[in-house]
Amino acid sequence: FEGEFYRDPFRNIDQRITVGAGLGYVVIDEKELTWEVTGGPSFLNTRYISVQQGENASDSSFALMLGTLVETDITKTLEFIFQYDIKAAQKKVGGYSHHAVASFENEITERIDLDVSFLWDRTSYPTADANGVVPKADDYRLMLGFNYSFD
Image (cartoon, rainbow, N blue to C red):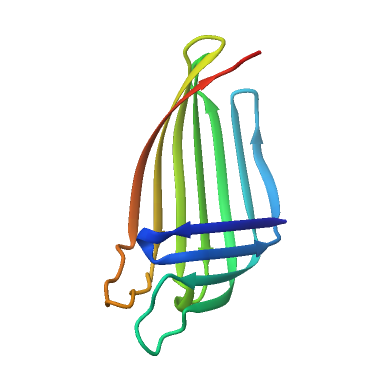
């Protein structure tokens, strides 16, 4: 089972609630490489911050979710993780929604990690706000993270 709450004011989304169920399969499960795939039906409800006159401020749709996760050890201290998810829904809630994360997790010491992640989100049909401004379909982010373990 899956549940998600999503909010993105830059993309005119006040809230998107997703509830779904699915099945997964582990394609590869080796010491240095893991690959998983998942899929199943879901229900989306999206509420927008503002919409043009005559448009619905909230829309719902059933969707098909598909995803994959790959984790591999490049070296003893460097791991690569790739996750990709897609939700195929009706155009009124954005159509196809893509989410991808590529991360490098580097163990600097036993207690300190440095993580670098690149994220990509895409909504095929973004909804215009009350002023007629349509958000860009693609959103890119670069995240840096430092982790310290207090073992």
